[in-house]
Length: 140
Image (tube, rainbow, N blue to C red):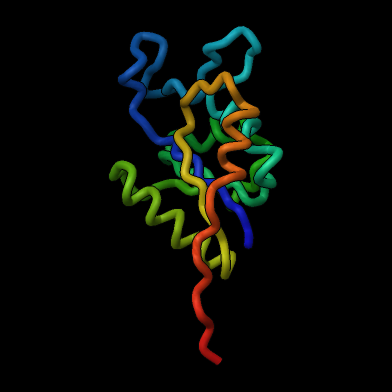
């Protein structure tokens, strides 16, 4: 079963004001001493579990240049610009439809782009322990 990840990277740049602005919300900022942005940290945290070609990013059209600049390892076709921002459920639904068309049998991890997680090994170990969903019966 294919493991994929959906990183939600929309936002309006309002919650971390004044550092975060509409032109550069917090997921595109480096808020730690290592120089990585929050979204770069999110992708790096996943790298032992999910290949770059299986990571999908759902974002606002205005943030496409930032995504392409900060995450050159993610295929451009995996960066999805929402037609209009509608919050979490439509974002996840859009990504699920895209992943379903690409892979017949996939599990989707859905993650925010702007969380700081210090215990990264424990985080990955927890993700590895998630139960697999039941397989659908196939009708021949």
